[in-house]
Length: 273
Ligand SMILES: Nc1ncnc2c1ncn2[C@@H]1O[C@H](COP(=O)(O)OP(=O)(O)O)[C@@H](O)[C@H]1O
Ligand SMILES: [Mg+2]
Image (cartoon, rainbow, N blue to C red; front, side, top):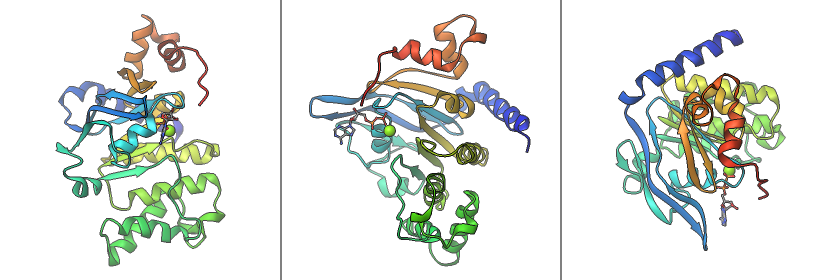
């Protein structure tokens, strides 16, 4: 498929999304989600609502609290306060059922170097109770999806950064989740793997998955996300489509980039974490 066609399709998807967003059902909601480490508040009273079918971008500088938020959504980090509702149910009270509908691709790779590619996918997919012939099919499907079929028998430790990232994704999709959460999946990888991952995210979304995409790369977020929340110092400071965010800063949005919007809203102070 040509680049232009892919871009056109994303634009059409965004337009349909903007038109229909008020009618879409909520898939995930955080209520006053807060995390403190000692006296430091790293996620501060977060209330976000994600609609089914969105590619929701969480954009923020390093240390903004993005990974902590994702870890709380997936119940890996316990919130100091607040709760998460997923598919209309309290996450904590329905943890087992809801975890099976979630695919989490963490920022820190969760693969095992001393296992072959297919064994990594098997390990994670089987955690969801998938067995026998279905498990075998799902392993093949997930490896095919991330372009690693031919490397299935290679040990993960021999993989490049981009291949490891792609294997990390394969491990999180074998159970066919409804909601996919990507935490900075393109940091430190080659442009081809980066482009491949972004195309796959759009494809998963087209096939029905809702996506949360966390990044500090504005151009990526702008290219693939239907809606964007800007996070800084543990707080969401603005939410909207890229056009809506630009309108918060200037009347005529034709010449402003999302980066300028971001710097205007978050300030230009250096972040050294
Ligand atoms: N386990 C922890 N103990 C203390 N501070 C932490 C811990 N995890 C994260 N932090 C701090 O919380 C802040 C937010 O971190 P993080 O959620 O990783 O941000 P982001 O993903 O946006 O870069 C940072 O200042 C980080 O140092
Ligand atoms: Mg992070």
